[in-house]
Image 1 (cartoon, helix red, strand yellow):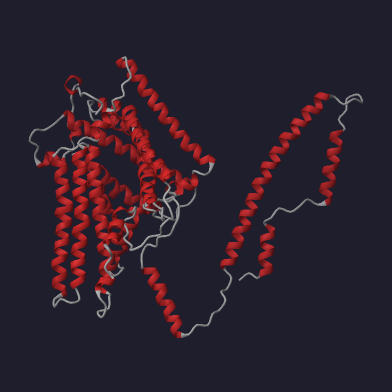
Image 2 (cartoon, helix red, strand yellow):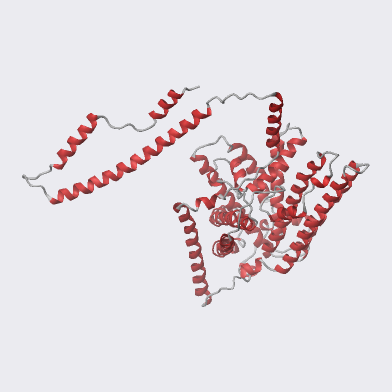
Length: 554
């Protein structure tokens, strides 16, 4: 281990040293010679001005170089201090056997208690305080303004007037009263049924004569509610009433969110009842209904009785976030109107071949990337932060710096921290617990499968057709990149590879799903068989333009 004088010497070597007296003398002589520039005994004004400009530029370059060197040396100096301080031997503390066992027990308890919530801001809120980062945000706003102007100009040229009907948004969010009623029924049932079942089970578990039978009976009732009441019924409402895509998306996303929250509530509280002493009443470990109600609205999928809370609500912040969500919604509208619909309306009437496929994918990269950014910013940043502020929820770490990822494994962990935490604690860790930590690769494969199935289920119900593009990307390329681009991959080149793969994947998703969407409308089948439902319609739909006229922008 390095001693204290060695640490000082090592760190001082990293700092820039002053010039020697000989070097300073040489520089002074050179400066004197340069100041005595004469022509025929007379100094010329032009040479003085030129020399001043030259010296000014040299001084600016010197300043830039010195700041870079100073920054590098200070960084190395601090890294050296941190590295050496980590090697210092801890001060020995004598503890009794009882205290040592108590400390060890507390450490194990903290390690196994799961996610710990602390008060912290979202990363983008911190980054937007930097002018350079905020300028990037302003650039996206300028791009939105250009989209609006271009759409208005094209509509004015084609129609001879300004078209401001937003027919695509009206179509996508149709039948909103039915959506609201369906959500209210889902929420009320989630509020009453799971809590009542858990309260009934916990209050009689240790007093009944057959606790295993009692647990099995109420557990079956809970699973029946999850599968039928919260799973089948909302989906049947969506399909039978033919809701448009955005309205379907609202119901299905809320369905999945509430199912994950209910699972977390039961999963976190059942062990507390099982481990409660028999001489104490179980009502001490049963959460209150208000705590469960707060959890249903809180921007997290991990249940806790209490969360860190902020002292007050900034209503101006809430209004700003909801206005940004609305802005992202209109942004996505103009992306589809200007970049997607004109392209895919004509592509869907062309022959499906390799050339058309390649052009379609690369032309879809730009709208795909914009939709990716908009979805991240609107939901993971604005929407969750707005609800967190209204609930005074302190932990705003809904995502991490996924854009700096050099591996897909790190990207999966940092893109959506809210969902990742649920998958990690209730899918990955529970799988390891069931298998006694013997199949870590199997646990990872299980997590990927659950995520891929849920994502594909959402898209299939929302779009109204089965086309497992996202499932194949998850299970094939996602798994492969997770092992190839792992955490040991560092450096800028791996970040470039990650972004390139992400861009290409977004192009594939936008291209194939858009083609299938228009093929489903251009080539409808009156009585489709089960095989017809599984076969992509875009592979066999080839219509001429007169037969494929489609009114409106949808």
